[in-house]
Image (cartoon, rainbow, N blue to C red; front, top):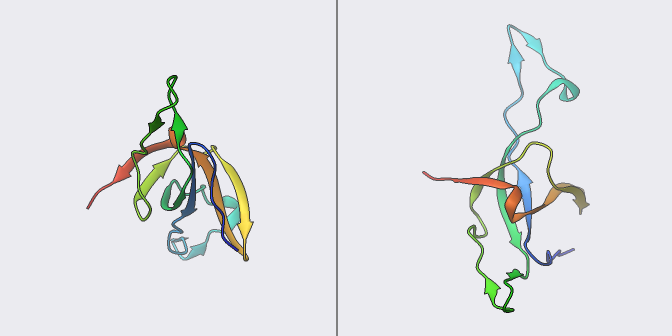
Length: 96
């Protein structure tokens, strides 16, 4: 299945951290913080300004980004979990 976001929305996939073990104690998924680092999977059709001109995205497919902790809508596609967020919910691009 393929998903094409609409407007200024971006489809991202969270980058999972390695299994957390602290002092030999396994931390269950329910106690872990939601990851904020993600990879851009697909871009929407783009937002328009007041004159109807397309506004270019500041991110591109493949970028590693930081997102707001509680933004977006979670969607499942082919058994994988993704997040649909507005470009405004992306806080920055990770370089390097």
